[in-house]
Image (cartoon, rainbow, N blue to C red; front, top):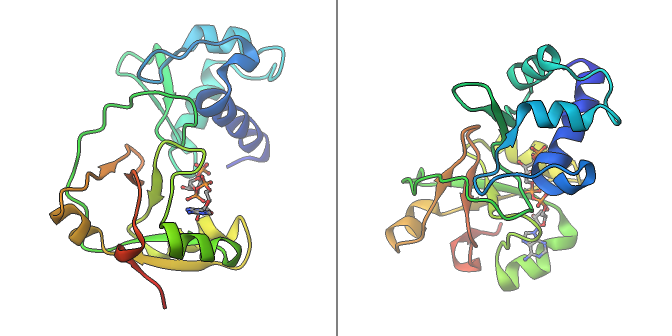
Length: 180
Ligand code: HQG
């Protein structure tokens, strides 16, 4: 992604996941913002953002963080929210194993309490170890935990997959985590 687009993408993540109030924007109950309203209210912060650039960012975003509705009149973040929204993802059967990337300083609590959603809606898990390594590298030296998602699902625990491929669940208890 172009550097300027990355900057705007970060700003959009902030607005569409965490703090729409910052620009006086309202998200609907499913997390959608009106595109024209977003563009209007963003001008003070990101004067270069217009519909063409917004489309480019949605299409080229490295993690497909945002999506338009079919008519391209609304936009939302695909996952990662801290504000309360219902993304209406259906429970789905996960693969046998999923991965979570974290760092050493959290390990004692994770061993005791499991993976918690912290500030987000869900615990985020990935199909690829490589992705978990990248997620953890944001915080330091990566530790990759293997999650027995197939076993959890058999026990009736719900999993969801966001439109950009991230696996989501409410909590992963220590008994389902492979600690090396
Ligand atoms: C840790 C980014 C203490 C957890 C990424 C993580 C991802 C605990 C941190 C997405 C814990 C939460 C999500 C416990 C979990 N005690 N710490 N019991 N349970 N943790 O950012 O998974 O670029 O909310 O290991 O790429 O790091 O924003 O979650 O280190 O896909 O699109 O608490 O965010 O995507 O951190 O990252 P986060 P995450 P975007």
